[in-house]
Amino acid sequence: MESWAAKPSEMDYWIPATSLCETIDAVAKLTFPDNSERFCFLQLTKATTHKCNADFLWDLAQPFVDKKLDVCYIALVPDEDKRLKFRLSPVQIMKKEVLDHIPLYVAHFKVSD
Image (cartoon, rainbow, N blue to C red):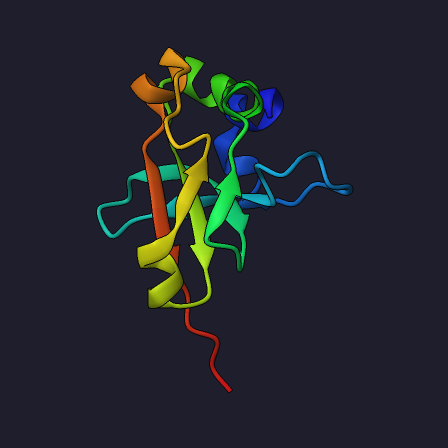
């Protein structure tokens, strides 16, 4: 993550070769219409309860935050109903660095036929 944070244009996404933990499935660099960029730590899940290891999330995000790059955490679920019922475990993230620097979002995606 440190080399990517140092050279953000080097790649657009990263998928770990192995399952690192239950917290992150991939990291994607999103570019918005105003050309701002955000590095999104993604978790794909069908569950309505998901474990979030705040220490691990911070370890991955810290190089980007140190370079003053925007980051976020997004849990992606398959439908609106699951999005509305979704809860993190632990329910409350206590790590100050995560609270200060990493917005947490839940989104749903539509799989087309």
